[in-house]
Amino acid sequence: MNSTERLKIGLLFTALLGALTGCTTYVEEPHHARVYPQPTPVYVEDDYIYYPAYQVYYGPHRHHYIYRDHRAWVTRPAPPRVSVDALFASPSVRLGFHDSPALHHSTVVRQYPKHWAPPGWKPKQREGYREEGRGYYDPRGHR
Image (cartoon, rainbow, N blue to C red; front, top):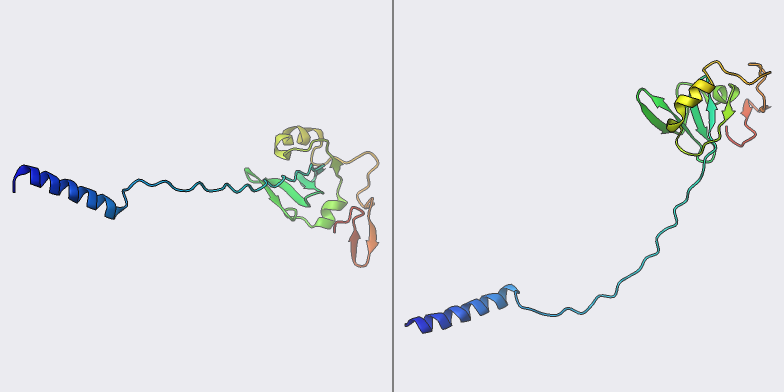
């Protein structure tokens, strides 16, 4: 076998190997793109209520409590180390910001220290609450 025959056999082998391994060129039909609409984000601005005695923020729209747990800010469905009744019976103030309480906490704590109460507030009064059965009823619809 001379070198020309070996070259022809080598080229034939390369072509056969390319065909068997799928290394051939082909044109694929274009896929039709599917378009899915993006869901509209739901953004609810919360008007936070701050409870100075416990340094807890309550978001009435989302029904969650925000507070510091050691060095981290947490969001939970219940307040820390206090019952909801006791929290709602303590002095509170509605705040005017709508973003994260962590961004405003240093100012809020200075403005409303731990023993702050609105003028005329009496601890045993439980303003805004009326008895309903065995517990207390919150006029905002939260227990």
